Image (cartoon, rainbow, N blue to C red; front, side, top):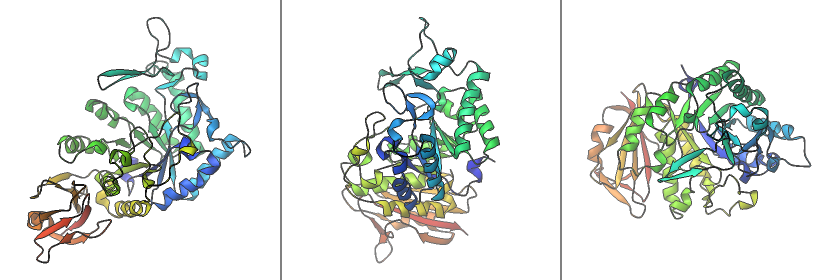
Length: 430
């Protein structure tokens, strides 16, 4: 049984973006806020010494810390990092780090120490990684690509030792950047080695945008979780539920309403607080895990930048939905059905602006009916009779909506959902 299958609850992850949070000694208030919202994991983007470009993902030295995160007048850098980990653990938070091993900064110490580890072009020079996006090719000139198909004993042992080093310091999770670009056997070797030393460690494969065959491949490499694409779903197109059905039997997934790689949702939705809340609730209950970046709770609109973001970019809150997020996270943790990739079935109702689905627990003992008003402007209604087949036959039925029970007419014939409303009805099998 995998680590994720044996866990009672799926991970509720707060993404603490280092450049916005500032130096390690100042992270305590952010960690406390994350725990106050009932998150139990914290994901930290790269905190290592960066190269010339200053990008968090352009790593020059994996064993040194980014000077921007160090309080110069405080303890030595490693002591500051360890103290941060101790603070998180004391709050009941487990920490996930970014494991970026498909490329390094072009001025990385590894290039000088191990030049054979890098992919080379026809001219013999190291290759810059690139990717196709919107019919154009993006090349990262500040990076050189690692050739992980070579030197299994040297290179693979280096990566394994790196992960075990941070696991030994107290890191309990690893988000593996662009995991699909690395060989399966490397992941099997690394994950198995780390888990022998730390059986409670979890590995999350960053696989967004890769072909489905690559997701299947990663599922067989020992990963505990992948990230799904539900953030971009319009609740109409069939692709999201189809992808869920394809991957749910292979590996659990994690949803997110926004990430450090996307625009802020509050900006995309033009400051619609209720729509932002609805998208978080959907992300939290749709899949096994959920992740949310720092500032989401305050409606921040400025996109996080892996080079330029600074603590001074902390915005004046548009709102504070921390209490709502706390209620949703508590709801997620309270029922097994929300902590596994159980079957999901769309439910047809008589109003196309209402989307409803039923999610089952893996043992079919629990199910939850989720009702969403896709209309951000107007209240919508639908006939409750259309849900009679879903609601019937349950031993117990409980309205668990995070913000007010589902409203209905006095004759119990019609239900009403406010703009961007989100409701949850939990059912236990008879």
